[in-house]
Image (cartoon, rainbow, N blue to C red; front, side, top):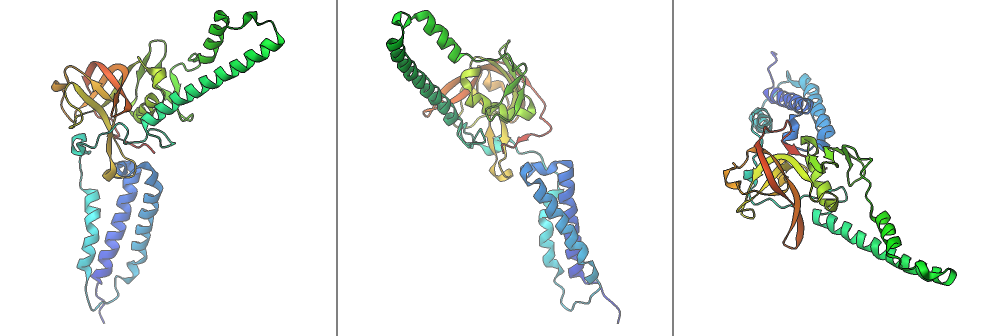
Length: 312
């Protein structure tokens, strides 16, 4: 009996093999980052390899006769494959209108909100200050019982001790900044000129650093690139300079970036990439501190190679 092609199996094999190769190619050329965050890279490679393996393993059944043909149902599996093949543009910030919140995306690995990080640092300094005062009081009592108390309360001595306790040593930083998580060296810091140039690859890390250690960088001139963004909560002479942050996939992206105050905001176009240079300040919105740039200069820029940022 003449063998006939089993179109059910053939369709299944073609779709499985093509889908697997598409996933692997997307991972190799990096375009998978338009859909999911880097943490899924290994899973995509495994999934692609399994699909190719399943398709190849089913090839031996292509010539087995089938009395009922249902190959059309497999065409449904081709829909996600076609969606991966069809070219598409990056998601624009304006398409996520009213999703902006400076505290919506956590800015450090401990999963604190930006304002929480700043408040925690402030509380920590207050606790340390209280602890030092208590310690100084105890030492003063001890010295009174053991030594001449003529030096107690000496303003000059207290001033020197206070300076030692509160001194921040930037001499070892050079053009690097130790990030708040203690693991990453951030580039673009010029402590002598009090300037910070944020690179495309360190956008999110620097936003985190500026929130968590605002007291250190207050008054610095910051140069940062992103898309101009406005929604119902940002109006007048203010806008946000943002990158879209993807935690897991494209469905959960949110605009992330600092508020900018600029008297020519109306002349800027939404979704256009700009390099903004301004002085780092802060303001309180809804009872929470958020960083703000008092803009000195705005220049139109080109989009980075990777338009999205991946916090985790």
